[in-house]
Length: 470
Image: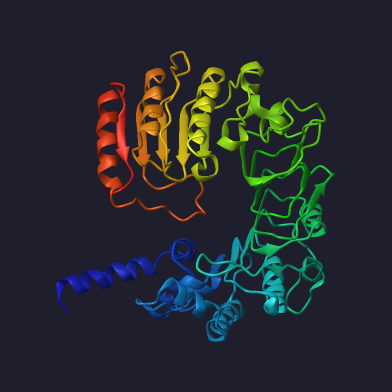
């Protein structure tokens, strides 16, 4: 054996001699498939993976995809009986071998449907019995349609089969992520009522939520995220210690009661519009009844530090001109859906930037996200804005080099006199769940030319970073 081989064996021996808790920390950095594969290294490693406290079953890591499989072919395989059966077998085999006394994290990532309901309930009960802290059920894929599974929480709570014990319910659960898992309004309320130590709840693509209401104060809930639940018409939450609230979906009645700790708010709507109530989240008259964000969250705006919203939520209103100063706002993210609002979406974006800058003296980071290339470039009518001393960073995504966006950025240069960094991406980064939009072949030259123009006008301290390979 050569010298290099001897050194490798010596290193492996030193690693194998480390305590179990350190080796398990190393294994936790691997995928589950990689962690299981370490069992062949030596007798010391053979059963070590069975004590892992993180079990995430992801179909793309467990199942084999041929190099020449198209997305459509891969999606068909995922829905095929053979692949589904193989996935379920792997999960069951791992759970039978599991020896840890507690689970920190447990996740199922596969487009399973109601036909697998009994097995899903057993897996969830297993996680509860081992006092899981973070539970994630993701029954969707990016390649294939979504067929939601209606989670049977009443069956999970009452489930018992030796050696599982779920009498503790969800008392150890801190985070719950449900994607393409259909909850009813009653299930949503049951989760919050039963999980008194709950801190984070994320629900995406649930089609049975309609009128969600939790009137009893939940003292531990810190983060609530509701994305693309398109049948939802009303949402009422009482969470005094809520720190982060994120919503993306139809314009609906939203009441987040007594959230005095709220500092991170994401309020993004789609094209569907509903009628609002005449009172906001504190029972006070709405400042602007037709305004999605300012009408319902006006009372919380002065305490918000990070705000994410659509240009369409602004509605060309003047509520900020007469409203309170946003002294705590540090990070503002605005998205413009150009195909829905045309070039006027960018003009509205400019008006929003000017309005926010005037009332946010300590704003540090500004993000502007443009989803599609505008077909027109109307003239940008400048709005007088005083020099801003605290705005240091700007991110622009969906940058195609068109004149209107370049003019908008240059206007920001004029008042952001202490600007230190500007980041530009041709991809749309305003919504991570969306597909990245590629540049048209003839746009590359326009982007380069526009970036040269920005270079010439940047403040002296600023550095320009391009996030794409142009």
